[in-house]
Amino acid sequence: MTDHYKSQLPISKSALWVLFLIFCAVWFYALAARTLVPTDEGRYAEMAREMVATGDWVTLRLNGLKYFEKPPLQTWMNALTFEVFGLGEWQARLWTGLCGLFGILITAYAGTRVFGRRIGFHAGLVLASSLFWAALGHVNTLDMGLAGMMTLTLAALLLAQRNDASERAERNWMLACWAGMALAVLSKGLIGVVLPGAVLALYTLASRDWAIWKRLHFGGGLLLFFAIATPWFVLVSIKNPEFPNFFFIHEHFQRFTSKVHHRAGPWYYFIPILVLGIVPWLGVLMQSLWNARREPAQGFQPKKMLLVWSVFIFFFFSISGSKLPSYILPIFPALALLIACYLEKASDRVLTLTAAMVALFAAVGLGFVGKIPQLASNAYEQPIYQAYLPWVVAGAAIALAGGLLSAFLVRRRREWALIVLAATTFASGQVLMIGHEPLGRYKAGLDHVPAVAAELTPQTPIFLVHLYEQSLPFYLRRTMTLVEHADEMEFGVKQEPQLWIPTRAEFVARWNALHAEGKKAVAIIHPDFFGDLKKQGLPMRVIAQDPRRIIVTNDIKTAS
Image (cartoon, rainbow, N blue to C red; front, side, top):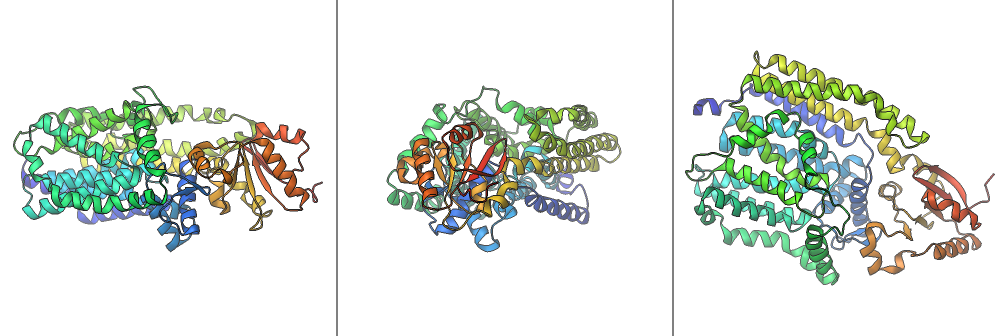
């Protein structure tokens, strides 16, 4: 393959800009198209809301309680967004959306500078259309923020170490790499530096590129890393002496080595997530990994670095005692670059089969769409799942049409076949997510907000009896008092036990006392415990309910 061919864009610049602007319009529109769904979206939006309300940018809190499970970067960014643009769904997702988009752009740029324009374009196309990356770019969770900063780390390392990099470029990009690791640490903890460090060590062993250690700019890099990452850890530890043990021991060592967080899974937990998440490029995934094994052993070997990054991080989380689907998100930019490298040599037959595989998945999805209402666990949920049906049909139909059209175009307009496959898969994924809104509203309890808000004054306490609502505190703009069930705030209630009610008996006494004093209160009660409270004769008027929650007030004067 000639250098001239590598340096050519596969489409015209005007077509590229049109596609990019359309993509950005859809990307940012989708940030505002859905309710903040429990658990992560409501949690991290509420933490940022409380940060703005209290003005405390050091001690993180959830529902008014100390919450030290994660570092502050995303909460800071969300809080800044709320300060500038106000509270809302798209504001809560803006940092996540920007990190996802940044990951696509920096991956495309690194691919362009290291491998050539064609591979850079294809890398951006692959990452932007991969279902998992595109989906989590629109979910307010920490893992996309982490993935964005780790993508900066990886891309900057590739750009610094490429064989034709000048001394200045090497230094500047390595400083960007160190900054990326520091921001990754502030995003989700020590894995932001541990994982890249382990990858670098394994890459050195695999490639025997020992000279890379001389080009890491340790002096300036470490100074920059600690200047970015250290101040908050020092401040929060001074202000909260209990922080270091909880954060570094409980949230890192115990999370990885034990099942203390009740998020265990089998060794193959992430395989189906990767298989589905890399669609529409599943048909070329294994070939792309295999293709990266051999590379000229002269200087830096970028494909081998990408292979080690992908395989090791996947393996690391597979053996961890704590597993969540989004943990493997940081491998997707590396996979996108490897897939883009392979697409340059992939045969028409392989690409046709890849497109046909997407069409087959979509056809199977259409075949099972009628079973979606059966996912409802009760009659209340039936119409909610029924409302999702047209969106699933539309999403599957778009993917089916895109897969078939792409397969048809492979031998005629190869580049447009790839673009059609990417664009229709991306559109299909966004349709499926936007159509989830009725289910999201139900899970968040959003439809009950007007009824609850009508009962509230600034002084009205809200109790959460044997449950925790992750989204309602954000939408009601209120913290709530936990009763009997500490949920993930167990650490917080141990530090500030006066902020919760540990037993139902104490709640009953508090509720009755408020009623006797003529002070209104609201309680959100788990349905399994409502009957018991009713038997105890608590003054309760139901103002809203569904199978997940029953919401009552102690003001029974207007009860029928």
